[in-house]
Length: 315
Image 1 (cartoon, rainbow, N blue to C red):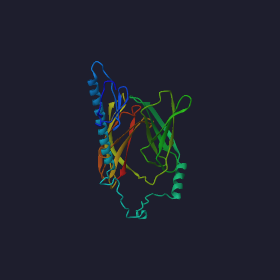
Image 2: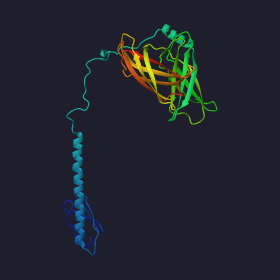
Image 3: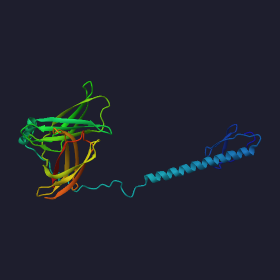
């Protein structure tokens, strides 16, 4: 081994060393291999010190990894004091679980047939309509529909369809009347408000429709508008304010009292629409409430007269 003479292994201390070749020796006891790079300028002493340090460092790392691996394995295999999912015995059989009650309401075939017959015989016609663009964009339509059948119908509504110049349908909208039941020969007014309209040119078509009655329907209550006054806010902008008094003529309380105001021209055609709740939404029997509503969005021209009505729900 040239000038090197190592009698003991720097890793395990054994004296059984074997030369493998130039600058390389092997410990027969532990199998450690040593490679020496001889630096002629620093001498053999420095070279041996470096090799010895590297062997000690690798041995210490091997011991640390082996010890930590054993600790981790012991921690994993250690039994848990509390089971993650305890096995709880079922004391009752599945047959003992109470069944849900059937609360479904039923309708007889005669009731269903009667409802269908009413819808088939119902004849709704749009007798007038007006439309205008809104100042802040969008457009609205006010349509008056009449029940021209000899039976009362439920849920009257207006369906508005928009078509482009090629007569292709662009959009379709539905709006319902505030009256949930329309008697034979009676009329009601429906407001259709579109915040945005198509950018392309279009024309509109409207039709009046109704829906079948439901077992959950609750009759509306019609109150009496005793008196009201109209104040002009801005006639050029067709802005008005209506104030008045509504009375509950019944022997029971009514809730959610809503006032509906229709602006009319000289021919009695509806040209404006407004609504608002009464100041007291729950009016006791034989009591009154004041109301204030502003008609400043859906009025197409200066009205010749106003017609007011009030609807509510029985408490």
